[in-house]
Length: 257
Length: 48
Figure 1 (cartoon, each protein chain N blue to C red):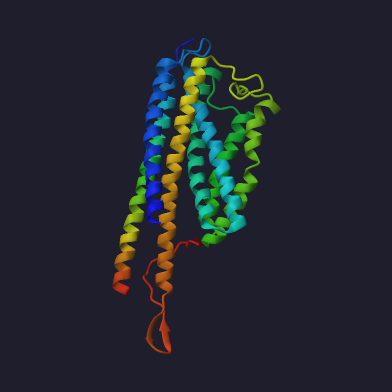
Figure 2: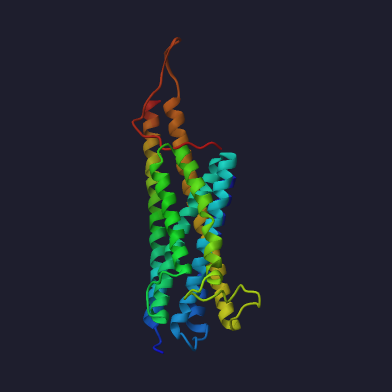
């Protein structure tokens, strides 16, 4: 157990260091190395942060979906921890993709926001994440909250392919994918390389945040489990008399693994 | 076309500020958890 914790700690530190180095390089490349776009000027450089944020919003949802299916199937707390950690990060990155998109849209489209397919379906994703936290907060008993939230996350997964395909299915202001398409990436090599470094840096950073958040959630579950065990321990006064002590602390959840 | 540097800096600044805010929030969670563990250990020692 101790060695597992040390191993996780090492991975957390390693992913933290690598991601910081890669993101510093990516920022330098975005501002200095990548050429200025002829049509959009410097606003196009927002691309190097906006696209990785969109990828992480998707990735977090895929992890949330896996955690939710796993929890409903196995009823194992590790899956629930995975799901709630991914949901928190997904909410952060979906917020960021919406904000950076709005900042990019203002100089290029002349507006912060348009009710068009890609933007609207991404906003729906943001509300799904928000709904997930509301269900967890208001569904009462922790096991029930985890179950209801998992069902919501599984139903909400339908929004991910809709977001991705929205630019092909409907006429939108948002451009079609220029990296992942049938004819190969439609970008100069220097722009593609900058995007790739940014992508990898942010993905490793996501892994770092997931490891940190999972450790916090695991410690929280262990504490709740120990509190529950403590409250339920029998305190015998005589052979035929048993009472249960109280600590005055509320027990908020228990781990099953 | 105007070079839009303000928008570029705004996008990067918002991204890094929000990520920094999240790291601060995560750090707060670790601190609260540590305090909860200490409280529990004290109460458990008293109740033993």
